[in-house]
Length: 130
Image (cartoon, rainbow, N blue to C red; front, top):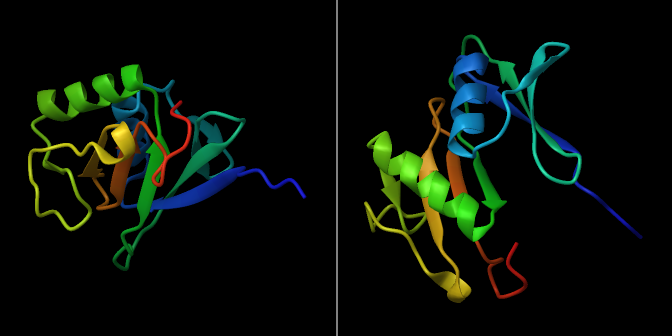
């Protein structure tokens, strides 16, 4: 059996702000309109689709992305340039740091709608880096 990830929907207080933040932080082309979504295209023909969520609070989600060393450097640089809070751990006990799990690098930070974003250069538990 072969299963491939295609897309996920991310609820946002302001879908344009959320999509722009995501694409800028991860060094991606701008998101494109797709129905009532803004679709940010990532590797393997997959997308992160941002949708406007008016009203109730948004349940914060965790989205982790495996990135190359060069992409990680750019992401980390943009975190520093924007003076964003970031952590080496999901419990937020190591502020202003990155981790080095499995011989790679990783960092956690939050999006404008409060989603927890993670960039790692090696899969957890080992495996081939990007």
